[in-house]
Image (cartoon, rainbow, N blue to C red; front, top):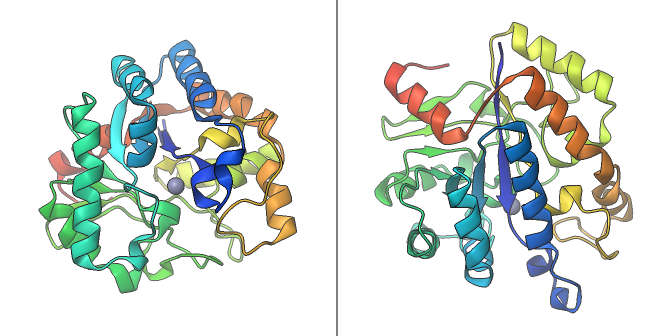
Length: 277
Ligand SMILES: [Zn+2]
């Protein structure tokens, strides 16, 4: 059975806007919905947490830990990796880890770069990640993308410089449509029959399926505003709100069909087999 890696990138989309906090904070209500769904489906996920959100909602981090999910880092303020120097990234990661540890996360193995901003020109980041105690990263979108992408990375998990595993996003096997098919916006807007068909192809190639969702991906009551990182593009922003009500059921069907693991569980398996997948 194909393995499905389940994750939530725990961030507050309002933090990316200059005037974002005039809108309602929807992070807790949406994250609690994920927790309830995962409890009902009896699956464990990885929550890659932005430090700022942890400071704001310590009780939420406590609930995630008590439900048995994995806690990983998603930076302190959602600043993209390529905008850092090695020194500033290290300081950011240490702050991110410290707050999560203070809130009870005992073992933090993994990191996800904001907006998959770990690209070839920022590959120095792996040394920083290893130096700050991470054993895996899931930060690469191995395809061309309007924002960030590293197509030459390839689709297999790799141990970088013998230091740290990278678990890249699973992309659609159709040339010209190399999008991270089981994550965020794509998991919501692509026809579900197509998604399932593509996942079958990926499964037949003996590859894992990586998923990622955000609190807003299931939020049907969020106020309307222009999301960050979209260059004020109205069409992309329309997609940001599309089919949010479909996501819980789509996720459930995937979780019912495949063998669900957290990213950390999978990274541990990679390490124990210590070969390229
Ligand atoms: Zn993010």
